[in-house]
Length: 568
Image 1: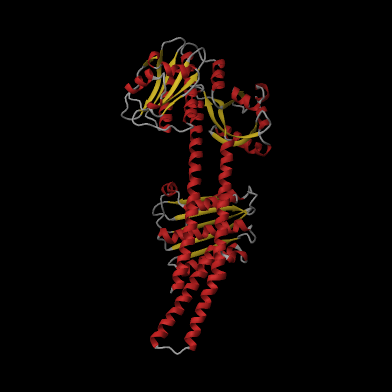
Image 2: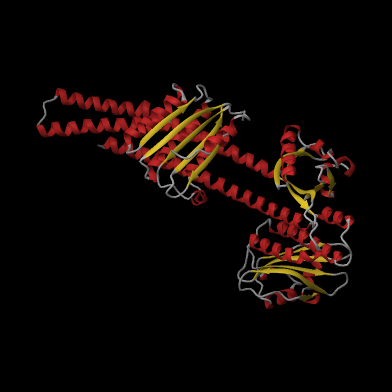
């Protein structure tokens, strides 16, 4: 029995080590993904604000600004966000807009400059003010400190927004309930949001006195923190703001019409043009990513979002769009993909190593132990009680050897090195059915005979994980595994008649099963879809290209058609 305990302890230690490593990598990966997601969310938010304010009637700017302040305040998680402005030689800051959290009173409508002299001197020099604790303020800030403490402010960030003609705007994020260690990127985020809101406010102030003109629109667009373009109803571009022209290093005459397309990377051009034309024909919003040549000749990834424009009579006037440089996000995503690939490769290597040790060493030793016990039973005269004990030990050794063989196979399915994917999956379905109270039906429809090793292993692991989840969580009585060959690719469906689950809830918890499936497929250029709901069963749909470096154009539509079939 000591050998059994030793083996069990060894397996537990090995499994615990693998799980600890995977969880550690998963936490790092999820943290980086959350940071990327938060950056993209803010970039999308500011891009949306920029497009909303362009061409917005002056009488709607205040309402739209209030909505924007509320969304930015919620995104930043602060108690109050305020916009103040000093007009020309004025001796006070006028409140232009604010957003408060629940239970927080409004800010004062005006602020006398004599109340915050230290702050104003810094703001006029273009310096931001970041205060986590009021005690951190140095010498010379005593007047400001007294004013802020009287107002109940515990932490604040004030960012100057330089405007034209000696007009100074400030956007402040304030905490009235607790001291805050402000994030490093908060000042930049407040700066970007403030630039958008103040440009809108200035435009509205001017447009209340004069009619909207093309010159004012261009001024607004050129000061926006994103690249902006406009096109007429004939799909030809008519305007690019200064940020776009500075990015490309080209003139307006070079870019208008179809000139802008000269800067699109040749590999992205047709896809970009198809997306652009289809959206125009449907008069619908569109979003696309492509590489655009910068003034220095390098290509940068941009996220382009376009929306249709209509006049007051509902007549289609063309499109307006904005572009964000997302090259750094792309690079970060590539690093995450590389980390994921190394993690999965390391996991498979470790599984193979453990499987070899179990099969080549521990299994052999266990078999020798069983043979030795059986020989003792034959050769030595034993009492009936001793004979029963020895027979029990022989059976236990055989059972352990069988379990070790099965564990070795699960860790590294050697059949994949000999059999086709269809044959290996069919054998696995049969084994699952024999070992568990689950009827597993396997269907193969023209499956590819020869697949790259990484594609074969990926799809086989998805079958393993899917059936394991069916057994553990679904309460299903039957499951179906379908392996379907398509032109240029392969589709795998695993469905059951179990209890199903809330997909959003499960994905929100970040279960390792679905994450592992998606990561494996993404590394080979594949795709995963999950269709499930409480009491409706579950269907896992995985698609993969026949060649890991070539996503064929012919098979995704066929895969989509198959995915629409009812589960069964």
